[in-house]
Length: 108
Image 1 (cartoon, rainbow, N blue to C red):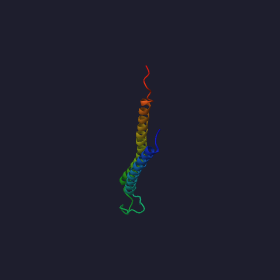
Image 2: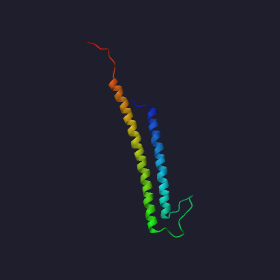
Image 3: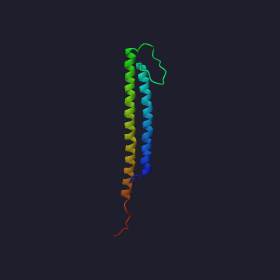
Image 4: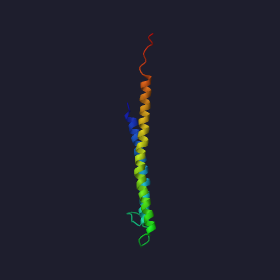
């Protein structure tokens, strides 16, 4: 039977890696929106006074979409990776326990 400690350890790994992916995704989204010419609150605007060029705007939107995709897929991949490792470890532990089985004395 799975223990609470190992379950919380797996959940902690999932949350920690999800935060890492969220930071990476948000940074890419911010860079992309900044390149597209959107003014982000709290950040200095490096865009010229006129709107950004079409190429820069398209590239910025593409980078923002990539950042959003990394945020979502990274979080999902973290969940799948660490939960699969957790399930495999628990299954291996349960299988080893069942294979050992009860030790009965030998009776000819």
